[in-house]
Structures are given as structure tokens and as C-alpha cells.
Length: 215
Length: 250
Image 1: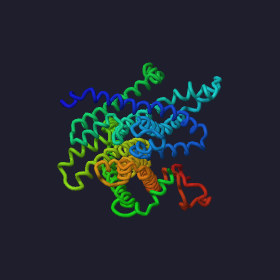
Image 2: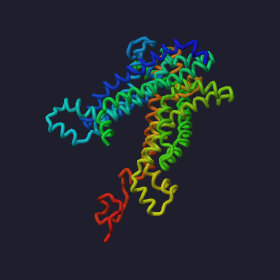
Image 3: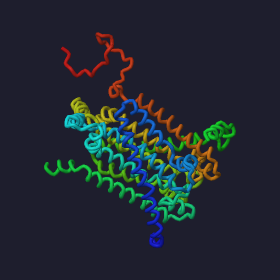
Image 4: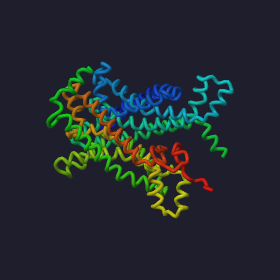
């Protein structure tokens, strides 16, 4: 493990870049998936189109997407924007269904009560439906977070620096230690993302705890 | 740009020989199906056992989460350095790539099998026990058929991931459709890369459709509610689908 001690600074730098490349798309993807999921729920005819369309995106191999996006976006191949866009696409692909199903799981009686209390559609969505769908959406977000962390490492093959660069470096120099450090760092990072989302969910759903405390 | 992809795909030279599309397609299919088969042989019995006995549920939830977090590219290189020197010939490259794909396919199949058995209607299970079935019989005749829809959906999502990820086998110099991606990248040949990606997506979709047909034929019609042309001796000539005969006939 002397290799890690000698290169701790490099590994930390790559970790920060990895957090950026995997984390930003999670937030962007959620922001895009929320209205799409709502649309799929609101207009039944759109549901199969949106769900099938977005899951088709998931069949594009990440390596292919990383290589093709520079041509489609007109960016440089080493531009991190390509990775951000690709990961956002995958996040949306995973989350649209989750958001639609989460909103669909809100009991009808709750929606009717809110309407009876004078909530208009927009306000009802923000303050009643969305909060109640948080547990389901957060479960989907956790899956997306963990797979984002793993997929981002493939971008090392096109030369975008992040923890995956440790894999390609180690492979080209036939040196196992950087690869092990990279794999462990990726897994730890996935756990970190998972923990943050879990914590945020607990904070966003105080009613779930209130039930437990009184019972 | 679309024209370039179309030109690449319709160029006769790309459809023959050692690095032609048919051969790469078959290689890709062979890697993916082998990995899926191995993963299913491990994950389905394990998932059925855990769902049936309720033992080791903690293991499933955590192992599935942890396996998702392992970066495929890193695992591929680690497996290559670990297995490569112990094997010879093509196997030295095939085994690491296969291992990565198997590790990738196990979590969705395992959680499908486990969740399928666990979600079986307790009444159906009770009824089977009431009819004198023992544990293994309940599993075989009631829980497994009832869990099939979720098992199949686990297999399908595992297959989609495996087909997309089998492209990285090309990084080790193996074949498959990933060759078009890696070679296209190396030679800045965009139409080749895009065609490769298109072929992978088409392959994934076709296989998913085949698996959907398999699912349709193996899942009991009692679960899906599709009765088709079953002939019954209903007084109304089979106009209404037969309902499970639970009511007394008097």
C-alpha cells in the first residue's frame, strides 16, 4: 500500500473529479425526470412512450455514448461536458419510471383531500404528491447514484480523468495496485452517495419517523 | 452524419470476413448468453432458496447493492491480472470478461427471484400446504411458477446490462461489437463507432423481445389473465373467461 501513500494527492484529486462527474448528472437528471414523470402520470397515453423511450436510452453502451457525444454536441473529446451529458441521460432513463410510479403510488384519497382543502394542481403537486413520492423516488435515485459512480469510470477509456484513470494506468503499466485502489475508492464513493441520499430522504420525510416514535 | 452511418452499415465489405458484422454479432451474442446462463444458474437457485426459507435476506440486499457499486472496467482489469497468468490461450482473456459480465448479471436476477418468491400470495402458499404439499413441492409447483414474471424481468434487465457492457471485452483485445467502438475510437472513425453502438442497441432490443416471448410462453396464464382459446363447458359457450373454481357448486 506504499503506492497509495505516495499518490494520495493524485487519488484525492481524481476522487473529487469523480464526485463532480457522477454527482452533477444526478441532480440534473432528477430535475429533468420530475416533469417527465409527472407528464407520464398526467397523460396516460404518454406513459408507455416515455417509459419505453427512456429505457431505450439505457441500452446504449456507455463507451459508445462517450465517444459519440463530442460529434453530436460539437465538443472536444476530452471535454467533461460529454460525460456530464451522458450520465444525465442514464439518470433520466432510470428515474422517469421511478418518478411516474412514485407519483402513482400516492393514495387517491390524499389527492382528493388536498383538492377539497383548496389546493390547486400546481401547489398540490409540490406540497402533497411530491413529498409523498419521496421514498420511491429516493430508492430510484440510490440505484442511479451507485450505477453512475460505476459507469463514470468507463470514461477513462476516452481519456477523461477520474478514478477510472487508475484502471487504465494500471492496465497499461501492468501494475495492480492503482486498480485495486481505484475499485475500492469507487465502491466507497458509491456508499457515500448512497448514505447522503438516504440521509436526505430521512430529513425530507419527517412523518415516517413521527409514526415510529409514537408507536 | 446519418448518411455516413448508413453508408458504413450498408458497405458490403463490413459484412464479411474475420472482422465483419455477422461474426462480431455472433461473438457478442455468445459472450452475453454464456454469461447470462452462468449468472442465472447461480442466482435463480440462490434467490429461490432465500425467498423460500427467508434465510439470508440481509445478504441479498447488501450483496446486490455492493455488486452494483463495483466498477466493471476496474473489475475487468483486476480479473485479467489475477486470472490471466493462470490460464492460457483465449481463455486468459475470455475468463476475466466473463467474470465481469456474470457479476453484473447476478444482482438483477437474484433480486428478481428472491422478490418473486417472497411476494407470492400467502393464501396460495397456505392452500398448497393444506393440500399436503411439502416445502420443496410448494416451491416447485406454487412459488416458482408464481415468481416467474419477476424472475423473467430480472433476467431481461440483466441481459440488457450484459449486452451493453460486453462491449468492454474489446478493451482486452477480444471480439464482439465492442471492437467497432474501440477501433472506431482509435482511428477517429465516427461512423464505425456509431454503427457499433447502433448494432448493440438493436441486439439488446431484439434479445429483449425474444425474452418477452419466452416470458409469455412460460408464465402461467392463470397469473397473466390471458386465457386465449381455452375451451370450457361454460353454459355461455366460453364467452367469459373461466374463474378459479373456489365457490361451492350446489
